[in-house]
Image 1: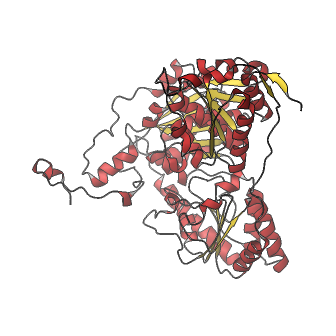
Image 2: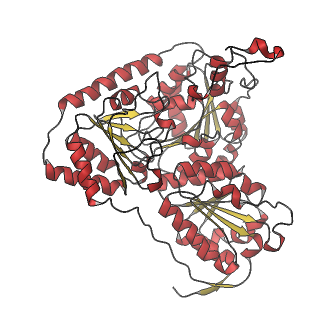
Image 3: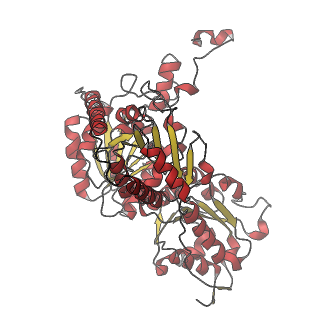
Length: 576
């Protein structure tokens, strides 16, 4: 297209349109108002949130379910600073979010003016690319580059714009940027992987987040079936292989599936697809050190920088996981067209799953008057529609969901992952619901995190007509930290008891949403189904038991030590 005369604001907005952006999340501010004025006529919906953190989480949620870059925008200074934690969450999720942050005017940079902050360093470590617009004439060019790099590297980018650079006349050409994948693995890598797998006694596939992002579930299923290889999901990626499949074992990692952990412990060859094998997701659980250290590891990831981050692979390939699975299966079929079903291995998976399912059901069988959190999750997941999307926060009970949530398709489980910030789930759920308006979307948060970023965003869901269903696990405590105080600090609770919680259902109703309070496990399924049928923003206040008898193991028992006190005034606190 030929260049046309336009303003930098028009160049920015037209670039958003060219990249397929139809929703931008943010909180209105004067710094970008000239561009904002164009949104309605450009066909872009501005989703106005209560806090900028939720805007970035919503863009992240929308990006994860659509697989396309999405955008958020904030006022310079305080508004941009509120993006930081959420953009870090997107970074560790490999989510293509474009964070647009106006800054103080170009002539005022460095003078300490109103709402001035050096915004570039704040985002440097948690973006794959960032740029400051250094001339108004470059607005379209640099905005395009942010979208291109977000797609190329699957991660957040940062576009920083001096607020006076939205104005003036420029000559600009508008076009969409290409989508380039990581490419194919070298032929020799495919042949070597096939050779290793053909000689395996008990191969196990680890299906990572890249399988969902790469729309490679069907190809991984075909590969697993050809090999009769059990498949485990990586930590908090419960949607990258279905548990209902006869070879699906569920997720490894904190509060995950014992069937998955016991199964991968038997492996002599591990094929890790679309995963960096994050350290936290491989830590011992349930008193099991399950990672098979002596197994031959084949690792495939689109990012060459992930080699050797937690385990040293015998073979590492940088490739698109979908293309890799197709080529590897072709090579295996060429070498051994019909290997037949390994009935012994398939039966072994069935035994492990049956044992885990029975144990999980037993853990969830409480009929106590004050609902056990595991009983709530058991009933909740039985009422969960098959096509539902679930976003999960961080925290003790939210982490326990890792053993309960099971999905049949990709892009259904959106978690805070290893950034682990409280307040992720509700904002991400709003974005996910916009991206998947045909599916119910649930956000699971604890009562502590609900106060950080959740409760106030119910107003956003009502105002913007985003029918998200929030599950607030109301146990009157910061459970993950309380567990540490139980195990290491002799039940001395400082800052972990949440006294005088409001009635979260009534608070939701005062904002215009539907509110439910459920205290009896026998009511859970009916409440969940009613919330889904309503088609409205809903908050389910799940009042559950707290304390030592119900909390899961600490996140990092290895990162804490029994306290030692040398000063006499603290001697009574020592447990060493």
